[in-house]
Amino acid sequence: MGQVDLSTHRPAAAELARAAELTAGELLAPPAPARLGDVVPAPEQVRPDPAADFTLPADAAVRVGPDPDARDVAEQLAELLRPATGYPLPVVVEATATGGPLVLTVAAAAPPAGVPRPRTAAEDAASVGADELGVEGYRLEVAPTGVRISADTATGLFHGVQTLRQLLPTAVESPSPVAARWVVPGGVLVDRPRFPYRGAMLDVSRHFFGVADVLQVIDHLARYKLNHLHLHLTDDQGWRIAVDSWPALTTVGGATEVGGGPGGFYTAADYRRIVRYAARRHVTVVPEIDLPGHTNAALTAYPELAPDRVAPPPYTGAEVGFSYVDPASERTYDFVADVLGEVAAVTPGPWLHIGGDEAFKVKGAAYTGFVERTQRIVAGTGKTVIGWHQIAPAGHADGRVLQWWGTDGADPVTAEAVRRGARLILSPGNHAYLDMKYAPDTPIGHDWAGLIDVRRAYDWDPGTHVAGVPADAVLGVEAPLWTESVTTLAEIEFMFLPRLPAIAELGWSPRSAHDWAAFRERLAGHGPRWTTAGIAFHRAPEIPWPAERDAAATPTTTLPTPPATPTPTG
Image 1 (cartoon, helix red, strand yellow):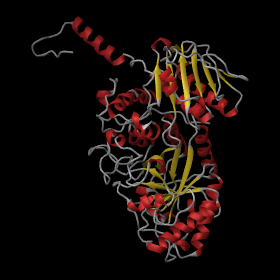
Image 2 (image 1 turned 120 degrees about the horizontal axis):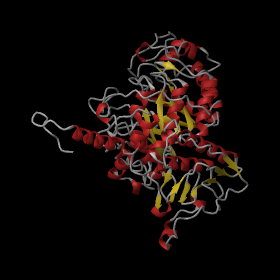
Image 3 (image 1 turned 90 degrees about the horizontal axis):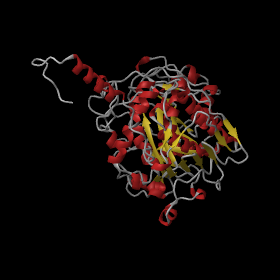
Image 4 (image 1 turned 60 degrees about the horizontal axis):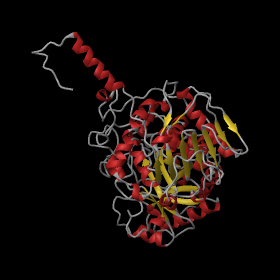
């Protein structure tokens, strides 16, 4: 719109009214309808059919077979859609779910809901059959008569539901009813992940976050098909998980955090609630007990574990590398066995993370000996060990996974550990560490690994990033968020979004789908969704966000305060 010099021209009332009407139209215009490929992470195969769009009717039901896990996914789909649509959306269990507006099935040979158009021979040759979807893959078909999601497992169905969520209008994120036409673009979408491990880490030790905040974080992961939540439960500033056999770990060690706040910890019931909530959303919790360093909180509670048997004062700063348990004491290994045993007993997932980073005062054979003995303790619990890549020089243990957080892909020590059988989770500090600032003026975060804008978070390939490590040795990717400067859920979201979807796409989508220009366009549509859902995010200037009512009032470096959201349940 052209600008008028008000010093020489006084607009008439009609002009002002017309200008206001045009401005309001721009601000209030609904976002453009979704296209079948407008999904993050990018799907493996997309065959749009504009003639096959589907509109959800008010009397729709969600139909599903008798499998209890599939039925739970159907219930979650209904729970997702009811608030914004206002529709009752009953879940109907049938021996064979054959047709209807919304159908979920885990039957590999399920009949189609109505394929939008005949496929060519080339498409048939390129398609992924139902028997090849694997543990997490799914097929989503949209025809004028309905939507069908089929998968080999309930996990695949759940991922398909997340895709359907993104294909519905933005208003589906509203917590209250909205008058809208609930249109889903027609076509067929077939999808499965590139890597089996896709996750994020939340440091709850530097600053403690209560159960409700963690559950919200799980929801953010599930939305983008991330399937692991790594909880950094122990560090110098606080011990956050109850251990019955060592109760002072939380009553004493859990009473501090960075800056001198009150800290906090999870009871066994709290932790079980987190694990249960995550499992329903097909997210595996990975607990980390950081050893042998980063242990000041434990030493404050139990000085018998310290090399000099003297309790250090509580620590509320942000330095690293000064604390460690005594690797020469048998009492230390009693402690390690008790703690890891209790944590393993309440963790249904296969992993136990033992940390192992920045133990600067435990050197050489003392360090590798400690790691090797701890690896054996983990194996005795029936779990598989994960450690930061500093444990690479220690002897190999079956299934061992190294979490690589370096900034230089030339790492011969890690590559040698891989040759001995280790697998890697990629968390490069200069691409995936979400506590790094976006820009110099980002109000929170660090910059020791550089600044990480959205493009830097996206522009790397996990399959080739570490020299000498083949793609088949990469288990997946993880985006850690350390919380020395992060104190609230809104700040977690601000640092997560919009970078977390970038990491999610690297972990899920085929390498051939990685395209920055296409990704930034797809990602832009998520800003209005987050706003509608009351989720804070950074309005990164490199993303072409759609015009929003409050965009001009929200500088990109300001931490927004989102509206209160209900405490998650389930």
